[in-house]
Each structure stands twice: as C-alpha cells, then as structure tokens.
Image (cartoon, rainbow, N blue to C red; front, side):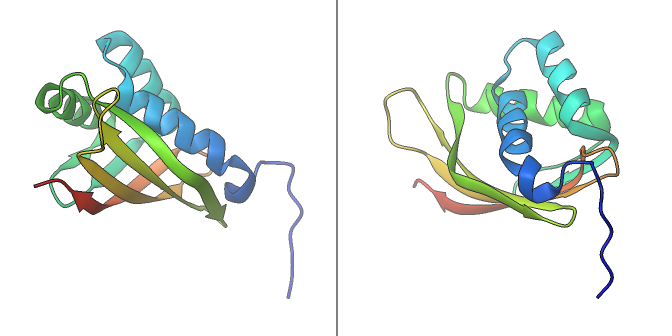
Length: 131
C-alpha cells in the first residue's frame, strides 16, 4: 500500500472541530453571524440533504437553517458522542432540544470534505423524532 504524508489535518483529527463549527452554524440566530459561520464551515457549492430538507450553496443552506430555527424557535443543537472521520469523511451525531428539555430529535450526519477541509456534501439521518 502506498501512503502519502501530509501536514494538512485529516478528517479523523479535524472531525471534532468541524462538527463543533457545524453545530455553531445551526445554532447561530444572528443572520450575519450565521452567514459567516456557514461560509467558514461549508464549501461554496455545498449540498445538504436530510429526510425533511435539501439545500445548495451558502445562501441556500443559510435559508434552510433560518427555516429550521423559525420552526424550532428557542431550541438548540448539541453534539452527542465523539465525532469521527477518515479519509475525507466525517460523521457525528446531534440532538435538538429546548433548554432543559428532552430532545425532540436526534440524528447522525455524514459529510464529505473538500480539499480545504470545508463540508461539501452533508447527508443527514434522523435517528429519533418525538411524536
């Protein structure tokens, strides 16, 4: 097997930071701050897909996040467990809950990184949704 050494962070070492920045973008309620976070963690041509929503590009994703925040006003996303990664793929789980309440949803997202370490494709799975 041939290996290539690189000084760039790997998906494995970067996964916790990437997941934390992803969650921060979803929790940002200020439009300007959310836009800054989206541009920082997602590639310009990002494609986001989960069972309920789909969005493309920075503007599409920012609008998708704003819609989710409107629907779940006051709720926050939190990471569950330890994010993992290998090659150019990261995986992490999250929960959505109102402060001090049980989660209304839990999910797992799998994301592909571009050459700059930004998320270019995110596929989300809903592991639990409250009735």
